[in-house]
Length: 140
Image (cartoon, rainbow, N blue to C red):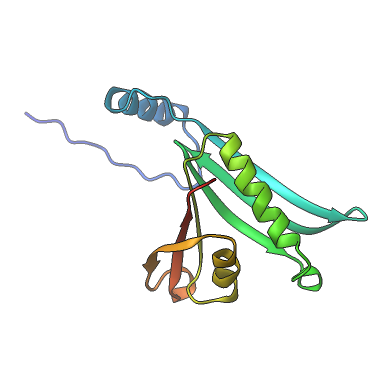
């Protein structure tokens, strides 16, 4: 007689058993170790936070999760500096490709394109039911 498999869903929790399971299973498939890192990059003036970026890198793929500059400080090079810091951090941590998601045809897409990024794919009906561009850049 076959035993029934129990499937459970746990919202917002970490589980060391699951991490160990994935680690063991992935190393059987791909013996090259994966490194995972996260970082926050900040821009401050006179002690005030005026911009920030949230980043991660896993298995050589760096992802820029968010990059934001206060409205008052936009178009003053802060975003460019944060983006450059992300790209440098990513390369220093072994990234071979950089990725981010942004609203398709929005002003941020044009900003990233001016800095050498390109649209890799488009996601219809994505965040807030809008079209988003998955952008990529090869470092170097």
